Length: 188
Image (cartoon, rainbow, N blue to C red; front, side, top):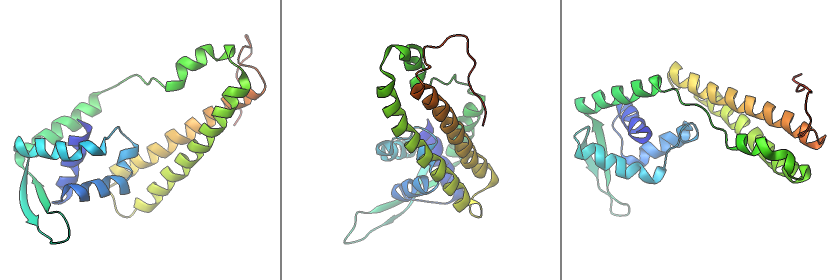
């Protein structure tokens, strides 16, 4: 569903070939905000074309490169786009962070092993924070305000994740994961 929505949304902006769609998704970091399998892009394009939601408008032939098929969204595709988009606005999934279950039992493992993993995780998250802000800054003048909200939202979520990881890391280093009856240190 996400890949089809992304394809249709890009084709609402202008006609494109699949490789160009992939470049735009990467440029706007769309592949960082949702689970998009770039390998499924061409399959999704084929399915949308087969179902009449997009149509070929041009084939660019080149002797030294593969042909590029340019697609355009159809009225049926516009209707599907709206349906998919509104479904996502209604969707309210509970967040299951991969570390939540591990945290429930982490007091039974050597804190130094956990700390080492958290150090790497913190470095990766710092990179995500910086990248998310950079993507936002680079696109202020080129994308609609709605896209800026998603880009800045990604930045804020990453920043919150970083604060949480650093607080957890401090407790791990202090060997406090097994402590009971003491509130977290929530100072910024």
